[in-house]
Length: 192
Image (cartoon, rainbow, N blue to C red):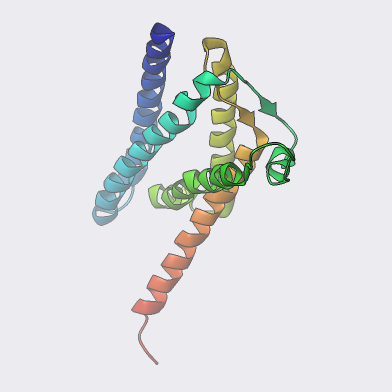
């Protein structure tokens, strides 16, 4: 079991580093097209983005210690079914409300930084449609990797609800950035 965990951790680390470097280089190239001042901000943003991608990979793809004991794998392809059921009391079973809330809020919060950082990385990624597309592709990729990971012993669930909440989280992050930018413009505008 220990050698399997080490092998999986090494594979995951290689994957995360490779993806982080590729995304960082893409962000760096995009930032070089902008002015010098924006390029400095772009470099800081792509470094933050690289760290974010690495942490996202670890959080979503590394097997959580608690999962090794239950040996249950699962796939949910029906949107919101398990999320709603999770809040319905089941006599004789412990309450799952706290777990459900943590899962939903965690999925929202996990992708909110993506919705903030994408427009900061590149003008081409500054629309809601771009954030929606990239966050959906990233979340579906994570769920597919979790599904495939079962064949190497990773006990992660693949859940369409995670994709939905991840995308909503990214769009909330994007909305927050838009509000922050509008507030900054309003504060800088001269008083009438």
